[in-house]
Image (tube, rainbow, N blue to C red; front, top):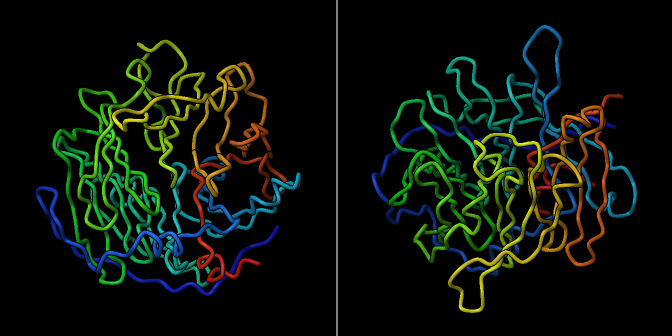
Amino acid sequence: MQMLRGPIKLSVVAGLVCAATLFLSISCAPKSLSTRRAEAEASPYIVSSCWFKETGGLNENGVFVWNIEEVLAGKKPELRLLWRGGEGGIPKARISWDGRHIAVATWNPERDAQNILLVEPGKNSEEWLTSDAAEQRCLSWLDDHRLLCLRLPHDRTPVRLQVWDVARRRLVREFSLPGMERCAVPQVSPNVVALLVWKDGRPHSIALLDPSSFAVRGTYTYPFAAAPPVPVDSQFIVDEKGRFFFVINAEDPESPLGNPERTAIYMAMPDDQQYELMPRLLVALPEEAGRHGSLCVWRDRYLIFTEVPRKELAAASFTVNVLDLETGRRHQFVPEWEGKKILLINHALITRKAASELGLP
């Protein structure tokens, strides 16, 4: 195991521009789908987050990278520590397509909120991108420079989606969709931004947005009306094939939202008429474990997720799973760092360009 060092440069983002509704305001000419796919081509490396449990104090955050091909070969992957710092709950880290910027959603003690920290790990340099009384979650890079996030204010004002232009060092967009209330979850693939919108306290619909203009391409009704998704930050993803993966509550549908003891992972695809999403495959049975989360799809074939045991299996280890969607074979490993087992979640892809910039072999 080793500390990772790479030649990463940091751009500090500042400024605020607000927009009341959805409108066109892009910082560069739209790229073709083939260009976006080429730039976003995934390397075999995955970025994941954890926290180091400390005695008598706040937990410290950690961001790791690991090689999925080692898991598929039957090996336990080597964890490379990308960044360690911060305090509070488990962070979410995302690496830009060019590998020059790392955004970490973590607790800001000065604001008592989860804000976005920009980190330059090779030089131990870090600076807050956001610093306000609001939670920034669901980070996704739209390209080399644009970062999408969800802003949840501490007051009762509406939630907003934000787009930060790192190259221009400013917040270039802040918007919502009609009907978007206290919660919404954006997920990004190279060809689409999928937004799960909540209404009346429950998931309501999924809007598909253009990743450059954010114009609405289409909408679907949420396909599991009786089973709310959990947890909020990792309840669904969309891949390049247009498949949706959901973590849903496998307990009593009327039970409150939170962290139920049993969940299930479903895949849903549009029907032949493209009118609605049809659940077609149960990819993780609730009897096999307790809770699932942190979904991520690698190269359209392998579903990555973390499994947390039920209370009666509390002594069991947290496992990272790689499920082959074509064969049904599941690969697993228990992450460890410095001789201790750790909970590794919030998995995301790293592009080939970013892996090279980070100095990964």
